[in-house]
Structures are given as structure tokens and as C-alpha cells.
Length: 371
Image 1 (spheres, rainbow, N blue to C red):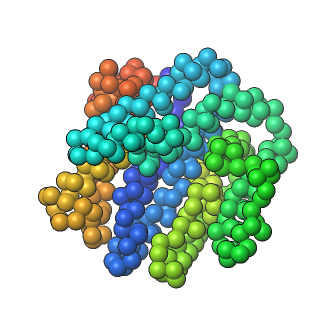
Image 2: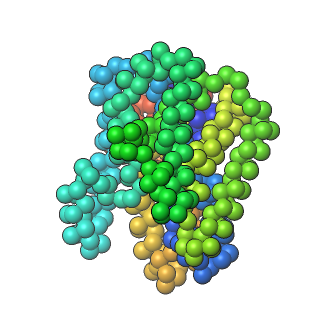
Image 3: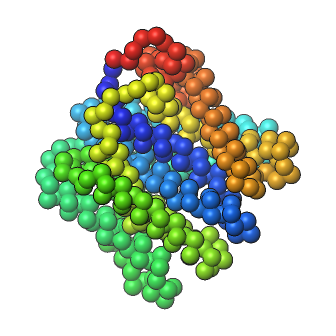
């Protein structure tokens, strides 16, 4: 069995739960009339903002260190089906849900534009991930032959010309935008800029001399606090939610994602596993990511009928319970699906024999120890 990594499994679960929270709190963050709920949502949303960048970083770190990544046959036989088959399966279920809830026209429009746009907002992630997978054989060959100087140079180009300019443009007055916008022939913003996170993960994976745990913990807390206070100040100053401090392609989010990634590496690398729950949740993370838009849609309807007249939580306690309920539903649904052989790969991207070793009901309740 492939060797598991405790640090990556913790980051997978953190990112999985983070993505669900970001979409749970999205409506609350755009309403400033409920200050306690807004401040609570902002605090957690700023912590979980690096969730998607961390997914890209882990993909790059893992794919660019494996020899099989350079094999085109392996890419098309194993890697791409692992993400495309579950994506299409959940897309079909979302479309059926739209039809049965009276949104037939929206479902038809979504289907006709599937190549251009996902049927749910969070599915944009796949439209960036698939191109990175397609490029991964070339990136693997490149990464294997880069020395330290060229790694530094490549990351500096991304940080300065993509993240740096994007961050500056978000703060300058409109009349200064063109001053910090590069000519289209100079733009190296490849794959929407997310290629940089993919390569950043591989770059950080290769680092041997890291800051101390205390330094990384301090940086993580400082950057989290900076994003929280900055977002609060900017939002109330403009009377509308501001994402300038939490944009995925900002220097702030990249710095926080890097601190969290390295903190997990320094604290957990090489440590032994205890129990079966963590590897199980980590193995289900992709399926949970795909099901959570559908769960939020259904959850809003149920919440509005059974709990309050509103389709969204209106207090901190309600939001917390709603988030926990949605998360638990997603996890249990994927756990059940991964335990049925014909459905396992279709909805989670895992092969049934692999899921039985770490991430389904058979793995959880097996008396055998994971090797």
C-alpha cells in the first residue's frame, strides 16, 4: 500500500472542512446587519481561506515527486479518471436535483455550458485542476532537472508578476490600475495563476531547512489575525464585503497557506498514526468536496422548512450546528458510497480495494491494522 503522510492527511481534512465552512458562511459574510455572526464568520473564514490553495499545493507536492507522473499512459488510465469520473457523477446528481426542485431550465442551461462552467460554483476547482494534471508529465520532467537557483527564480516570477501585481491592483485607485497591469503579451498568469500553487507545493516539499515550529506557529497566527482585521476594516469602510485580504491569488493568502503547509510539515512529518479516523476522512476528502454543494442546496431547503423561515442560519449557534450537520452528512454519505463496490470509484475516485484499506466502513471496523 502507498505510504501515508500524517501531515498531508491533516491538511486534507483541514481543507475539506474549511471549504464546507467557507460556503456555509458565504451568505452571512455579505450581510453586515448581524455583527456577532459576521465577526464569527469572518474569523473562521480567514483561517480557512487557504483551503483551496492547500489542495493545489498538496497535489503538486505529491504528483511531482512520483515517477509515475511522467507516464502519459498512467495519466490517462488512472489519474484523470480518478477526478473526472466522480466530477461527472456528482454533476449528474446536481442536475437531477435541479430538475426535481423546479429548476429544469437552469439545469438545461448548465448542461449546455458544462465545458465552460461547472453546475455548482465550487466546481471551478476542477477546471483548474484538470489542466494541471494534463501538464503534470511535463512539469515532472522539468522539476526533476531544476536546481535550487531555478526553483527560486520560477517561484519569484509567480510571486511578483502574478500574486504581487494582483495584490497591488486590488488596493490602488481605479486611475492607477493600468500602471500595475502588464501588457497581455507579458502575462505569465498560466492556468489562472493556480499553477503557481501547484509548483509551490513541490517547492516547499523539497525544502530541508525550515523555520522553527514556534516561528511558523507565530507567522500562522499573525497572518490569520492580519487577514481577519484587514477584512473587517475594509468591509466596514466600504459597507460591503471585501475579499482583498482573502483572495486566493493575493500575497496574503499565499503567505498563510505556506505557513500552514510548513507548520504541518515540521510538526507532523515522520510521526506515527493513531487510530483509523484521520486516514479515513482524508481518503474521503475529494468526494466530500464534490458532494458539499448538493448538501448545502438540500440543507437550505430543509433548514427553511424545519428550523426557521430563513434558508440560512441567523445566529452563531445556528450556523455552527448547520455547518456540523452539513459536514457530517457529506462525510457519512461518502463513507457509505465508498463501501459499495460499484459506487466507490464512481462517487469518490477511490478504487474499492484501496478504500477498504483506509477509507470506508470496512476499513473503519476492520480488526486488521493498517500496514
